[in-house]
Image 1 (cartoon, rainbow, N blue to C red):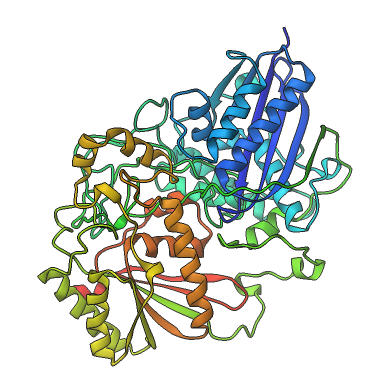
Image 2: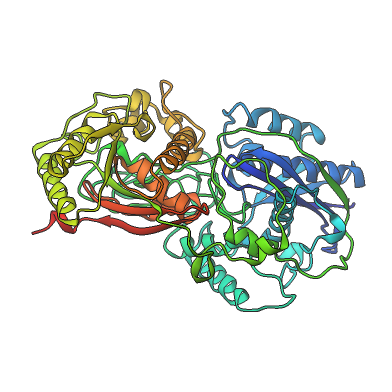
Length: 560
């Protein structure tokens, strides 16, 4: 009996942002590519794009032979676990897509398998081609596709077994080395998409994926003192026991390559000194900003794979230079001269003027910090402790010595306003309050430790660890919603303070999200950042839309 393998992927440059998917139907016996499909779908989230890729692949396989069994292989833990029935589907945008996919074949005819991202490059590159086409205002052209040719060292489907758990550090480092090596080769050789280098680098520093907290299979579990927290000063508590999950929103925000790699949401964290839930992230002190679920339809095409006659385009290199924000508008065409001009680095266009420079100050400690309790924007709104007030005075003195801050903007919460007030008194400046800089609302979890939440709301916590769209018990704010809010606040403040240096006094989630957006890094990069109470970080925003991270987690002013 004939058997098909469907490999599918999707991505969003902004999450939500310009999105596309790619699907490949492969003959399981011969490894031959039978059908390629890709489509730019407009503004959508990463998860929506992944599901759209799955639907396209299943439909293409059914058109070839509706009686053939199908093995679906994807690097999205979310889609694989949800379609396998091991994870619940709670997000309203995901449910209809999953139901539609389940109706294409009779029950039992389709099986689902997770594979590492490096084994899903064909579909990944189709998705990137679709997004590149959408950026030019065009449809994906199967005849011009280079996806099949740029997949190095084709491997028989039967031999494509995962080389390690999701985010294996060795695999990640190898991907980074491969991307760097390919970047040195010119001419017609295809370059590795920027997202691979980014994902690989992150993975080299620690797991990029892990198994679901409950009900899942495979991956690397996170155990020990912290499933949620722990950098020195992270507003989130370490808890005894173990927890792990995929955050599953791979490209969230501006990952240039768009389609790649699941996000860690259960990585083990070091203990660390402080701990209220300001850090607000599944397993670290950052926020796992993911897909917001928004979707829009677009036009695309599918065809039997053919050998393209064109040479390798510079689409991947253009994508690597592009930092799309969550509020990216519909793509527009790009001229050849624009593509030839680097937008970052030494070759960037000169005379951009002074950037808007954000000095990012995390507030000082509160009484909840050492107790490692959730403390977002929906709880008791604690003031600074004695330790926190001392930290605020020290950072105020340090900023006064530097003498560069021209404006101060703070979150509306008491701990940030008090910290900002200490600095303002030293600098002789007024404090402007911006609601967009507030911390995530943790709903019914406010004031609880991670262990207490796990005991009282285990199912909600498991879902929250696995999906950035999930809300805390009692209608709190999802990390996806938090990310969209922070990006909007960033855009407004950059426009208002162009060429100025502004002190933003805020929380762990907003600061780490701003840094991640500036780097164009994937969500798991948030879990690799240390961010202490009363620490300083700096991001500069230029007139051409690019950003530069100049400082992260400086606590030198707190010592001595």
